[in-house]
Structure formats: C-alpha cells, structure tokens
Amino acid sequence: MDNTMATRDAARWLAAFNAALDAGDPTTAAELFIENGFWRDLLGFTWNIVTLEGRADIADMLAAQLGQVKPCTFTLDGAAEADGDTITAWLTFETAAARGCGLLRLRGGQCWTLLTSMTELIGFEEPAGPRRPLGTVNSASKTRETWTEARQKERAELGHLVQPHCLIIGGGQGGIALGARLRKLGVPTLIVEKNELCPKVGDGVIRRRFDVA
Ligand SMILES: Cc1cc2nc3c(=O)[nH]c(=O)nc-3n(C[C@H](O)[C@H](O)[C@H](O)COP(=O)(O)OP(=O)(O)OC[C@H]3O[C@@H](n4cnc5c(N)ncnc54)[C@H](O)[C@@H]3O)c2cc1C
Image (cartoon, rainbow, N blue to C red; front, top):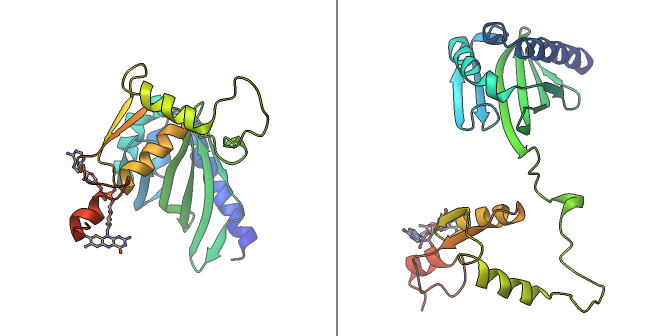
C-alpha cells in the first residue's frame, strides 16, 4: 500500500470516528478499534493520564466523558504512512475545552493504537511563538517600568496583594519549569523550597547530594 492509499484509509477512519462521537455513540466509536486496541489519553478526554485497553474500556470512558468533552473535530495532520500492514497518521483534535494532537495506528482498517494529548486550553493559550512577550522595551516613556522594577513589584505583591492560585512544593528543576509555564499563562504561582542553603534556584539536589560548600 502506498502513502496516498494510507492517507485515504486514515481519513476514512477519522470520518467514521468523528461521526460516532458527534452522535454521542460510545459503542460505535469503540467498535472502530480492534478488539484489544489501545487508547492512551494524556488529559485530552479524561483530564488524566490513562491507557484504555480493549473496546469495553474505551466505550466506558466515552460514555462517562463524551457529555462534557464534546469532541468536535479530529483532523489528519499531514499524510499518513504505510508500513507493512500498519498505517500511521498524525492528527489534531479539538474538544469543548482544549486543542490537542495525537497519533493513530490502523491495522486492517481498524484502530490498533490511538494517542490523544492535550496541547492547550481554549481561551488560555500560552503566549508562545508570535504571541510571546518580547522582553525588551526599546521605546522610552516616563512611566516605563524596567525589568528590575517589575521583578521587585512582583516579589513584593505575590502572597500579599496577589494571592497565588498555585503552590509548588520544591524549587528543583521540575518545580521551576512548572512555575515558569504557569507564569507565562498568567497564573500567580509561588514556589517554596525547604533547602535554605541553595545559592541559586534549582541547586537543592546538587548541594545535598554532593555537599557543595
Ligand atoms: C547521584 C545523582 C546523580 C544524578 N546525575 C544526573 C545527571 O548527570 N544528569 C541528569 O540529567 N540527571 C541526573 N540525576 C537525576 C536528576 O538530578 C533528577 O532527575 C532531577 O533533579 C529531578 O528534578 P526534580 O525537580 O523533579 O526534583 P529535585 O531536583 O529532587 O527537586 C525537588 C526539590 O524539592 C525540595 N523539597 C522536597 N520536599 C520539600 C518540602 N516538603 N518542602 C519544600 N521543598 C521541598 C527539595 O529540596 C528539592 O530542591 C542524578 C540523580 C542523582 C541522585
């Protein structure tokens, strides 16, 4: 099978899947999977990280979630590829609350594995790419706030005038990365670190492990 035929088959499967979801029909949607097919969902449908195994699990999840998730569009993202008896296709999808991407693998016209991964919340998109704050202000004005002034203001207000919506326990690399993403989303976040000896954020583990002076 060439990739043109693989793309046609993947598009056909997605059209049937979309129709079953639009009709709110978990059984028909689950029957588009092979008997023991897998659906790995990262937040997109379940707000959780789950692997569903087999049609019964998939139908149960959809019956529980379809009402609130209201998935509307699964779309092919580029051409599908054929490899032996397997067709692989990237996809995008949108639900009532979020956008996501995923990967579909078909065997014999049915879904063998499906991955759905939420990438952003609709209305709360991360200011990335062209939406990213520039960070540099080249124009001068009387009311211009320097980076240092903005930082001092944030430090003075957070936890006092502005209450954090999120508290991260531990300022290691994981905590700091999460804090940075939440900050970009405009979520006031406080990171607390128990290790007072850290000379810099993120140093806690290294100092404890190697007893750096
Ligand atoms: C000996 C060793 C060598 C390693 N070498 C490498 C390497 O070379 N390359 C590599 O990529 N990875 C390495 N790793 C793994 C890497 O260090 C960890 O995967 C990484 O640090 C995990 O980051 P984290 O932010 O999830 O957790 P951590 O770095 O453990 O951060 C958690 C933070 O939370 C703080 N904390 C914990 N409990 C509380 C609490 N109750 N209140 C407040 N604060 C709290 C801790 O003080 C710490 O600062 C190594 C690990 C070890 C043990």
